[in-house]
Image 1: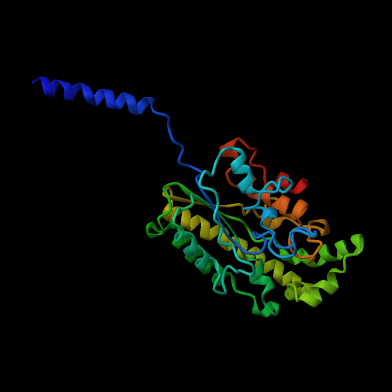
Image 2: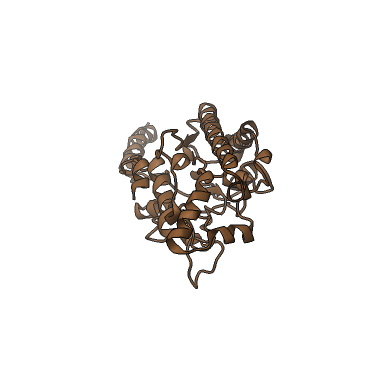
Length: 309
């Protein structure tokens, strides 16, 4: 009887100790990203070091430069991401084509030993710029199918992402504005953007195409962004709350990355194409943060305000 009495008192004691123990916040443990050269900070800053190419420190998502104020740096400033970051983004990657497309990168996220619980995805510009002509552009259904597959991989229990993981899909930037932005930069700074585009073969569907071609590109990107909204809504319905899916897409002008008209000042001084570190990358960092987890962590959630900087 005495032993039985001691066991009856032990249970309340254990419960009390559990209640008094400090709680552990399991959210925002590790950040990952699926993307292309924009996520790699490619050619963001003209300097002797780092040389041209991937300049990770200036990436809007995974960088740490204080001027850019990337997503990773913002999380760390709040004491988040104790497990750090592990990105799978690759230069030249598309949503649809190639061995580094969205589904392939999603598989690489799932293969990480320590699984992330925050994942940002930005793809689509190369689905336009890697094409030889506007007649070769992927259809919106093809684009949607690739994204559906990637989100299904991340949402599946076999991926093993932690409960409550949040996947945020950024809208496709309107690269049809590249031509006018590059000419603006050329006129204002003397940077020979047209010669650079021609020599490097940069985004010929836009830089070598006609005004009609650029109009077709604009319409297709709008279709891609509508496809993103539909794919994200479908994934959210299927996999939440275990894995949450959101997007920044908003069809209103200057309301999201997909409707922001970037200017000459936003373009790299190296290639007149990639986002410049202290303007284009900084804007992407702000827009991603404000459209994602800013409000939950004490921010304003005003993505449109990022385009007024």
